[in-house]
Amino acid sequence: MCAPIALGVASAAASGIGAIGQHQSASAQAAAQNKAAVGNYKYQLKVRERNWDRERYRYNRQLVQYDTQVAENSLAAQRAYAGEQNNLNNVYKKASFKQQNNLVTLLQNSGKGAARGQVGKSAQRLDADLVGQFGRSQATAAESLMGAQLNYDDRVESLRREQIGANNKAYEKVAINPQEGVAPPPPVMTPGPSGLALAAGLGQAAIGGVSTANSLTPGGLFPK
Picture 1 (tube, rainbow, N blue to C red):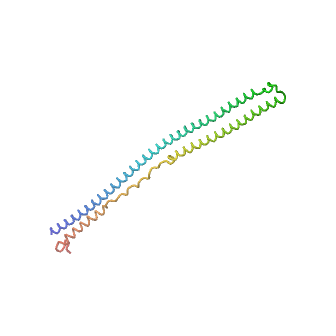
Picture 2: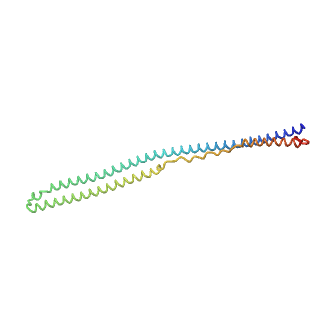
Picture 3: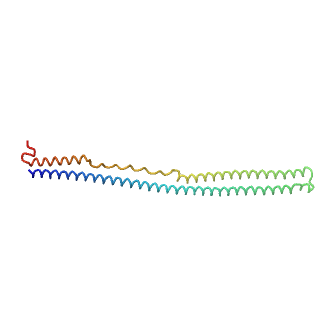
């Protein structure tokens, strides 16, 4: 009877070892999958972090370039304004010199009729003609100065619009703040084999061992 029992025990042990081996193999496979999933998740987080650092660095450089460009635009505009103002000042200076010359001419010519012996209406007519010429010259100068002022205003406004346009163009590169990328979803862990399944396998192994021993024992282990 010992031999059948020994065979039954051996059969149960072999089945139990097989169940334990399957349990360990499934556990190791689940652990390996989980380790790989966690490693991939950490790698994706690291890539996201590096991309975000690179985007912030790039955006900060663009901010510096934007500030530099705006400063250069302002300097260029100020130089252009100064040039236009200088041109307008020269126009006013020339008009002033011309007015002085006209006034000197008027004073020099005034009274020449009397000096030449012209009296009465003839002298008055000559003086009136001189005053009229001076007045017309003054009106022409005033109209010219008004036109120069209007042209100056137009050019200054054009320069102002150009500066605004250049600043807006530079701002387009920094108008949108960079956003950090969407975080990767956390890994889904693979569950390992249940301990109950191992217990059930060991139980089946024990039952199988008993069945083997019972089938090899004449009359069975538990005769009726």
